[in-house]
Image 1 (cartoon, rainbow, N blue to C red):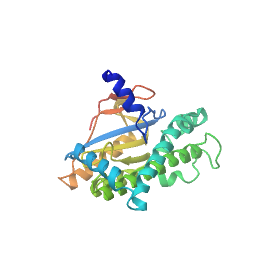
Image 2: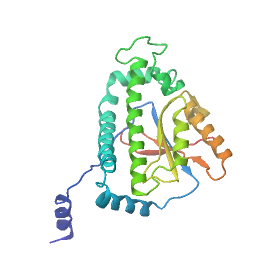
Image 3: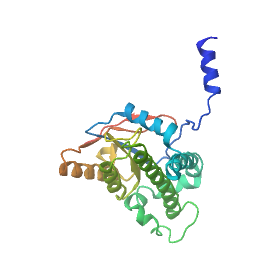
Length: 248
């Protein structure tokens, strides 16, 4: 057999418990990444998690629960980004009220009626905010599962230091969710947020600036945790990441 044929047999004969598919953030929702000075041994961490998944995760109910519920949450996020958050009524409401209303309120305030819509109807600012809250809660569930999985596997997927920064970031107006990307560890953060009114000639916005100011303040308090926002953002609808200039 050729190597290609062997690969096909290997892939088809393996029982996969996950899939990979592209998703897009709706226009008006932005991604911000940060490099955190520090480091993590990602290959070593991944090996420990895979060993836990293969040999130890079924020792207790909660251990097995983390992996299964993480899969459920991930599937829900994909479904939301591919369906509920691509509905034209939602997109119209986000375009109309996202920058001026939703981005200037915290997630706690999203739970209450907004000035432009004292009652909920499809596409109202309150309706849009409630859908974003659903995404926020699902991403928060992912974080909880990853942190629990890390403790079970003895791997710092979301260390307490990163939890503190992510939680503080999620309290800012306009922020949907924050967390640790990839294999986890100490060296990066991500934030998904509602884009605010533009600043710096369009290269940034008010929510992005608030996040940067918070990270700068936290970095000044603790010399061992220095967060540097990266000048990349989701380009939207199939274009992956793009570089941008930030005056931070």
